[in-house]
Length: 159
Ligand SMILES: CC(C)(COP(=O)(O)OP(=O)(O)OC[C@H]1O[C@@H](n2cnc3c(N)ncnc32)[C@H](O)[C@@H]1OP(=O)(O)O)[C@@H](O)C(=O)NCCC(=O)NCCS
Image (cartoon, rainbow, N blue to C red; front, top):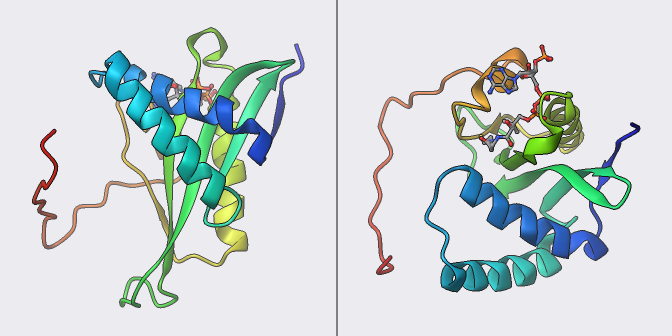
């Protein structure tokens, strides 16, 4: 079976929205019908404004059927000693639907996302590694990053 891997376009947004919801479910988040609707609407609007501007996605397709996805977001901020260009990339939503796992699709998508990040001259790419994703990321050269000053958070929504 020949699976095509290509960059996502605006016409792929419905597929990318589904990938977002299925990814959250795959990671074990409690996705109710109600919050799935809210998330889907936000993701659709967000991607309509941002896709191929500061967020990029690659998709693997088996004919018309989605097999895998992954996203790269480019962020800009003030330079740091570890980030002289002030830009970095973040890889999110790596998902291979169960029927298509262990065929190298996530690896193909990761390579595309990393190439895109290199083209944009970012200083680094980072991601949050699930247990399932970790072996792949390690094999691509990702290492654990433990900041000297641990991150903190103040949650402002009621969820
Ligand atoms: C993680 C995930 C995206 C990997 O997708 P995939 O298409 O099956 O990955 P690949 O086929 O490209 O595998 C890449 C390599 O990692 C290995 N690998 C993949 N999943 C693995 C696992 N769970 N345990 C050990 N090794 C694994 C493969 O053997 C392969 O090694 P190889 O290059 O020597 O062949 C997929 O399992 C998934 O969608 N999981 C649920 C969502 C998730 O956790 N996403 C990652 C969030 S950070």
